[in-house]
Amino acid sequence: MTITPVILCGGAGTRLWPLSRSTYPKQFLRLTSEHSMLQETVLRLEGAPGVGAPVVICNQEHRFLVAEQLRAIGVKPKLLLLEPIGRNTAPAVATAAVRLAEEDPGSLLLVLASDHVIQDKASFHRAIATAATAARQGLLTTFGIIPNSPETGYGYIRRGAAIPDLANTFAVGQFIEKPDLVNAERFVAAGDYFWNSGMFVLRASSYLEELRQFQPAVLAAARQSLALSKMDMDFCRLDDAAFTASPSISIDYAVMEKTRLGAVVPVEMGWSDVGSWDALWELHPKTADGNVCEGDVLASGVTNTFIKAENRMVAAMGVEGLVIIETADAVLVASKKSSQDVKLLVDRLKLEKRTEHATHRRVYRPWGSYEGIDAGPRYQVKRLTVNPGAKLSLQMHHHRAEHWIVVSGTAKVVRGEEEILLSENQSTYIPLGYKHRLENPGLVPLQLIEVQSGSYLGEDDIVRFADDYNRNQ
Image 1 (cartoon, rainbow, N blue to C red):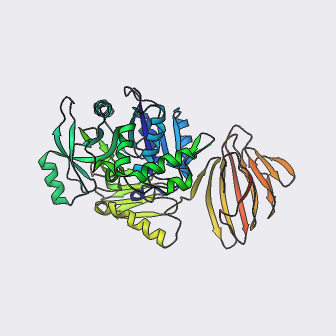
Image 2 (image 1 turned 90 degrees about the horizontal axis):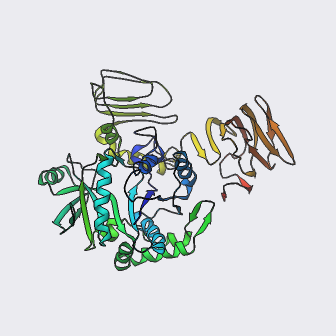
Image 3 (image 1 turned 45 degrees about the horizontal axis):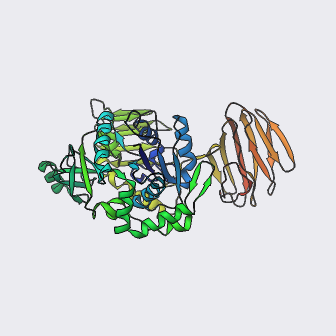
């Protein structure tokens, strides 16, 4: 029986700000290798016995990022499910379980987060096989990470009695919220407590039956949102109203803390949820002084510090135990001990209605990307990159005019009733209210500078008449 990975790709990764932001969160970033964390999640399943193509569940705003990153590693998903709004893990997994149960009620789901690190792939594969054996018997099985330190940033699972005839599988004794340091030390010393990984192997019918018993509203919303779903290109759009009606609740709270079918498989596999800069520092090779330095960094008398420079040279002197992260529009300086609290800064940015919590200076679109260069009253300047063969929507603006200057490549431009080709160093002007479209008909990326001027320059001043990507706005 094929095991279907169900990859949850909706996290915000706020503790890794300013690198991780809501429009481009940590699962899409290359943090530990040349691949993004989502790509690593999919690639480490290669060679796992009985594991098939994944179902990926993501926010509809991230759909093209997910599709492009999977395409880049040659993976065709079984299904791409789009959530209209985040409702935590229980509803997300319920929709996948309902869909897979339609094919086979005995379908096994391997539920994975898209932003975790697992360094020992062989141990991971063995744990999947062990958990799948238990799941085939109807048990809701989770992976318990054998702790190597008293972490206060993870929840814990206390194991119960060994389950007869199942190797290395125990009943769940208790789920425990993130503890203080004293209790975390006690848990590690006891030897029967594990970090809660948030990964599961579940039989679809078993999970749905437990939802019916403990969270019927979640199950009803999942069924209804799928029944009313619509295919949009390669994406399955869950019905907005039906899915939004679901309670927002995790699998742990919805089912695992209540069910009598819970089981835990202890495993050591080099796991981390990379939930903070301190955790990422732990994963990287370090200098003799305990430093991790990435980018153009000059460090003198610095110890046990993580410094990442993305755009400029960063110099540090005589400091210890810091996190220093430089991006194009924000710099974070924090104690490593406080790195779990970075999300509080993100909350403050939201309250102050700033944009740095949501977007980078470079913003990705299905056709390529744009990057802000300069802005002031009634004007802004952007650098656009349009992928080969891609085109923007046919659109117009009520409040701004645009001037396009081609830096490299070839641009095909619809401007009112005319259609023109522009090459390097050529330009065109798009008056306010004109229908227009930009396309790259070439084989190399199109680079151009866009100068906007007008009374309002927001991204919501776009009226679309035609769009290859079925965007509503």
